[in-house]
Image (cartoon, rainbow, N blue to C red):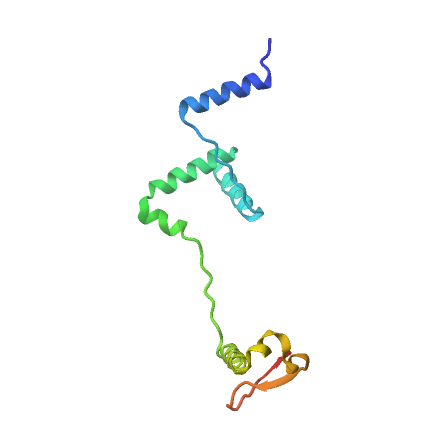
Length: 130
């Protein structure tokens, strides 16, 4: 007689427990899934678990010096241009000069559009604000 799904699942769970295996689940965006699929195609590996296991072991084999650069996530550097810095500074100075009740939306000027000159140099720029 053929075994039921429950019997097969129980037998597999017993083997995993005996070997000390633990299930690891991975949720990933489409780009990561595509990268894994390409890696699997390049190497001829058909099982995702096998590909991920091999990558982990090979990466671990590189040691800390080789693995850490590959495990460092890319960081985005934010740079503020001089013109944006001037705009932010002017805005900050303007806010500091306001009284506390004006800072909470009771300012008459908040209902009108006005222009503030941003710099005193030759290429003057204008910041529109409400």
